[in-house]
Every structure is written in C-alpha cells, then in structure tokens.
Image (cartoon, rainbow, N blue to C red; front, top):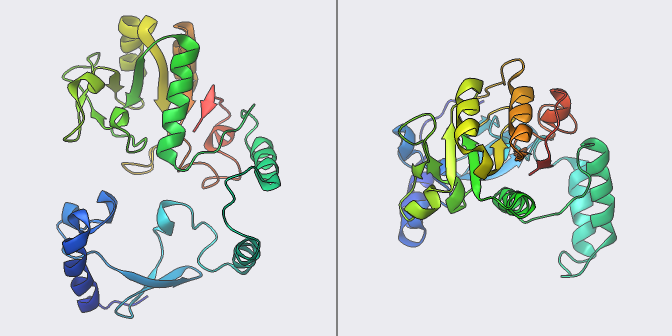
Length: 269
C-alpha cells in the first residue's frame, strides 16, 4: 500500500466540486471535514482489494463502498454478468423474470422473508416497512436506537430526547418538530430503557427499528438475550420488530445477521 500523502489532484477537484455540488460531496460520510481533514480523496479506479486515487496512490480498500463491494473491484464473474445485462438493455420500466429469480434467492437466504418488495435504496426500504407497520397496527410512533442509521428520511434523522422515555428531537436542520414527535429513541443494548419506553408508549408504537449488529458507530454486537427481549417486549405491546439489514445482510455471513444470531424480526429492510 502506498504511503504517499500528496494529493494535489484530489485537492483541485474538491475546489471545483464546491462550485457545483453542495458541500463539495454528495454524502456527509464522504467529507473529511468531520474528522479534521481537508479535501476528500478522489478515486480513479479499483482492482481486487485495492483502489487507486487520481494522483496515482494505491490503497487497500477497507471501505468496500460501505458494504456492497464484498467481492472486490472488477470481479470477473460479476463484470461478465453486468456486461451481459447491459447488452440486453439496462432499464425497461416493466417486470422482468430476474426479479422473480432474485426474490426467490433472497427468500432462501433469509427465511423470514415471506414476501419481497424491491426499492431503490435502503432509505426507501426502511420507509416502506414503517408504512406497512403503521398500516397494520393503526399506530404512528416509531422507536429507534440512538446512533443507529436508518437512511436519509426526515423520520429517521431524529436524535435522542432529554430522558430515557422522551420523544426525540430533530437531528438535522429542516426536520420539523412535528416529525420528531413521531419517534422515540433509546440506547442500544439497554433492555431496561427499552422496557420503560414500551411501558409508557407501547400502545401507540407501531414498530421498533433495529440494526441487529450496529454499524454506524463501530461494530457493536447485541448483548446475549437483548434481541430476544426486544422481540418479546415489542410483541407484548402489539407492535412490530423491523430489522434494518442494509449493512449487515450478506456481510457477516451468507444471508443475514438474523440467521447468524438465530433471531427473526417481523420485517426486514
């Protein structure tokens, strides 16, 4: 791996990007300012376990595009499949047999999936499961664990309130106080705090969102019995358990973290 620290081309591109892209990057996670850095590193290409920036520096790719590049860059089998698909057309706006094939493969890999609905992003997947939970239960409140990331929708950009059983507060400018009142946050791995929340708000809660293994603030595993207790408490109050496996599925094991941990939710995003 290169130890070069000079990145003049990245710095120049960042200056140009700030003229046309908000903040110079298209995701907060791509900004180095949050960790005291300057211009982000602009990549040119990837090959296997490495990628190369626009200044010719080589890096071991521990990022893996935050998960999807689990087979490395330019894997021959995947490249061949993408090329074949492109030759037959990339977008139809109609159903395709591959949707059925893929859905069946997901069901075999993740047995809790009784039915599958494809969306364009993890954010939309979470939004859809919440909508289904609200429709099924006839309730509106959503519980999430502090610090966990569930997409870029207003409802999920909510920070913890002032106490263990209080409603949340907006975590981003532009998120309304009314939206914040629909979400309750609680610490991960603290089952007593969760129990307290459900005792107070349970009859109004539609669902709880769970990262079975937390990825947004390090790899945090659930304490023994925590996920089972969440299921038990949630169902006792007539609410649903939703697992957000946008990051954990197929990364820790083939299938999902729920299979690895031997626990099942009501829905999976």
